[in-house]
Length: 451
Image (tube, rainbow, N blue to C red; front, side, top):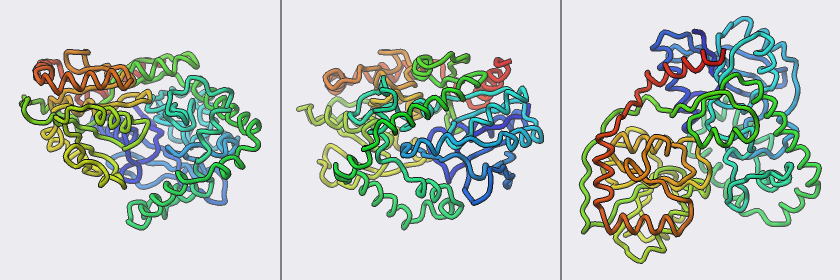
């Protein structure tokens, strides 16, 4: 089968769960003797939209969209009218006629013109979409509003005007998509500039924000048009790959979603489950792995732990560095900074339990599966998609995302380690079948389901 994947690009330029999953899926499909291709939104120039072939990578034929629609990543959409510009679909028709893919697997709609889906319809090419996040429904990707609550009503675009006020400028998006930026993205100078830019946005005055919101009704209409633009794209997808029931429930609110729920995996998932020992006399070693962000629930977890009088716990934080980490009590909090997959064994050997306290409707959460692969019990909020792969109270614990419930749960675990000991035993006895090649076969079957 000839497959064209549409993603944000390859590592190390792109990172995160979407990139990890799509890249590993492509490699596994190649091992299954499929013809695998990748198309991604690339850089901008003064010419027209074009699709250029780049150097192949690990057997993957790579194509770059020149002058794509803007790619906001997690920054938000500041100028929505720039994201809905129409083009002549001939560029996509010609490309697809030459490539002749059997199926196009979209992992994101960022940077992609609506005309590509119109072209697939015209050429009768099957399409699939994996629900990595909520971009297309939410310009900020995570469906969390400015109050830190789940956004169930975007108020015809009015709420988007506030949520996206600090969105990236078009100039910044152009720079971030440039080949020069790709080369120097991880240099110390660029990292420092990114950090300063983030701090500048966080410190903007209310007057600055108010001035930008003077034409709020006009902007709200643009956000409403933006959502409609993406709704039209979603409705042209043949089959959806939902990585969790959480994701399916959310997408089901907006349109008919033919497809299947298939939990995701990646090529670094291996069955390394082992017995854990729990000592009631020692502090409970709690793990948090991920960005230090509100929507990921870090501050929610921090508040709960600080409210526990019993200090028989220690939180190990692996993820972003925190500028004020020295202000935390080092006897209770340890910040390790960023990590990579090669460190997971060491990390999971160190902790007794992993807490995933997300307050956004996380479509899966690889870190939960990774913890289980080492036999580590997981405690996840009701909004975490990887809850689908555990049995509540048996191979993990699911809690309502409120402080009182999480506090009560953590206190219970701190005072009775037998709970974790039993969950660890149950994890060792559960069926653990998350080999990537098997998953790749399931996705191939899903493509055929779309016929």
